Image (cartoon, rainbow, N blue to C red; front, side, top):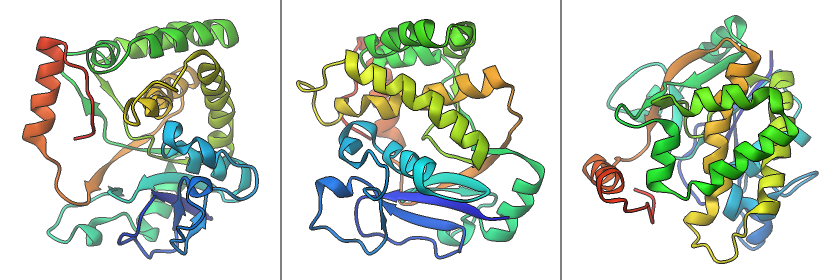
Length: 258
């Protein structure tokens, strides 16, 4: 069983050395002089130039078109799958033996769901970003994949979702997902003008895809296993909560990552 979990990064950082991990320099086409000494996302069939808008999806696309493995996945330089907790976060990152055992039992491994409690996925996006992104996405699904519309609506009503575009999936399933996902996103790109958006807001295709993953999983009735993840560095939870409440109560849209 061959497993390759891409670790998307755009800068020098400490990376896991386990054989299942493949660090990928995303957005390489836009930064040809920056060589991180790892696999770039601009070889073969690729969308590296779209990285400012698609974020880590340029790594997923590269794997879809160019990577041969039984299972393929995605993690981030700041966020990794984990099944345990400890003081040394790198010691907690999912290792080969654990991953092979999970993949022998499940076609899909996901990070634990993120709960929003007081807000549905649709309303959370409406509060924090431009809801026309999702409205347009729904219209595209209605036109291209009408059988998915009810599932899309049901998932958008949930108060939880699997975020970060992180997964470990059997390659043939990942291929099917990517074919569906990028068909929708490329059409969305045609219908939304990103030229006037800030760099933060222009990353909308990566955000929309986070919500579409559960739509595809739910419609196709893919069974999965949730495991934990470890955040490298500290998350500023007071700031996150403050931004969430300002968006929810006062309608102040997100303008930066936190």
